[in-house]
Every structure is written in structure tokens, then in C-alpha cells.
Length: 68
Image (cartoon, rainbow, N blue to C red; front, top):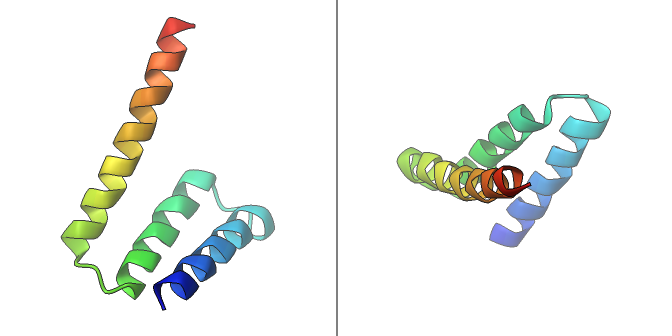
């Protein structure tokens, strides 16, 4: 069931970005929250997972930009 929810989340993400023209960052946040709630994760765990994911991604991007 988790795989089906994840695939539906990815399809919804693509639709939000390409068809409905919703901003990418907002689409990621909305779909992440929706998938987390559909998987019955506690709200605190969802927010922590989003924060850790964005933190690690932004950390690697900052080092690439800083080093040129």
C-alpha cells in the first residue's frame, strides 16, 4: 500500500507542477504532507522528515555554490 501511495504522490506532484502551474517548492511541501498523512505518520514525524530532507539538500547546494 505504501508503494501505491508514493506513486500517487509522484503523479500528483507532476500534475501540480506541469498542469496546474503551482510553484515547485509549494508543490513539494503539499505533496510531502499529503503522502505523510496518507501513510499515517504522526505530524511531528512528517515535519521532521521534510526539515531533514531540505536541510541536507540545501547544505550540499550551498557548498557547491560557495566553492564555485
